Length: 217
Ligand SMILES: [Fe+2]
Ligand SMILES: [Fe+2]
Image (cartoon, rainbow, N blue to C red):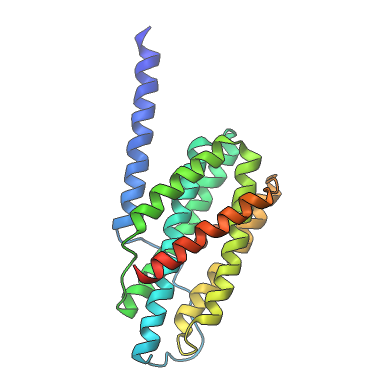
């Protein structure tokens, strides 16, 4: 009668190792992209030093946001109840890997660096994602839908703040915004429930912490 418990504990160990492996890949391995970095029409004007610095800060924030998105999806996939919801979360996380890789590539090109706070964002977001999953699939899907709505508005803000000459970063953020709108719509169509106003406000406050922290650190 020991076989089932051994296989259960092997399954759990396997999942823990899988999660650690994923976290290391997101935080410390160069990310591979399935889709090419979005192109921009026309040439690439040289950036002034002050413009380059501002682009580095903004793209560092966006990279940190994608680190957080990875952790949220992984946490939610871990605790999702329905197999198809868990599968949809993992698929979305794979698609989000492109965003992470694009931001990483652009930061490299600009001579910038990723946020020192990324491990913190990953851990916190993983916990929040796992909690959302525990609250049930409809809440978890509603959480994605609301997150993507807030990310869309954040990206619109960054598109307005990007130096005018930085067409390459702009092309990346525009494609990301397009994808986030699709992710939000997909979560809503799978049955996401609207979240209470207080939760939406708490989410906005948390994302402010991430954007301010990553801008400087
Ligand atoms: Fe994304
Ligand atoms: Fe997304």
